[in-house]
Length: 273
Image 1: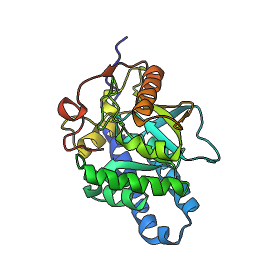
Image 2: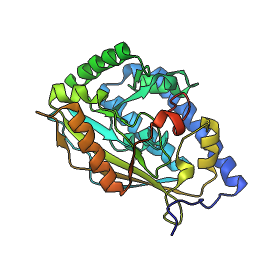
Image 3: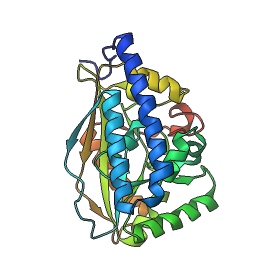
């Protein structure tokens, strides 16, 4: 059996129906964020984000199969480290676990979605700017101190789901300083035949609109999320954490780790997320 394949397509009428539902859902989210979020408690905001993400997945025909469970009560700082395949990754995790993600600054400039992401608590980092990375690390440190779980994608860009690229260690420094529990999360998308679904990925020159069209055209997408046992960051270096989380995710997905630089031959140009 091939590891990758094409998913079964939906009828044009279903795609149109899904598109209409998607637009209504996005505008409902904009309304809630703009008018209601200022009056919500942090807990209610988190619940609203989780509900919105779960509804989005349902509209897009994405079915989640989860192995393991998020911690119910965070008595220690928590950092989620996941492999990165698609812009769906954040919605998959948000649907079951309220995490503040670190994303590249390009996302902040996306129409509507960038604004929504910022208001939902996403932290943005300028790629390749060491001083900005240091400021983000301080912001992450503050968020962790408040009890927020932080999510990062240490590959630096997306893959098509058939491999991992080397994990960068820099954003794991706050986890080390806080002595956090680091939760490796393995993500994978499958098609109707059980093969890796490359059409769910968001790589190369693909635009967000093109990615949406490919996703809306599929009958169903099976998203698998494996929440692995946490790694205690106490007395570990950030490089040790990067190596251990990378190894755990690679083993869970049975994927090779590539030495290829993700920002060159794979991953959205401009560092899209």
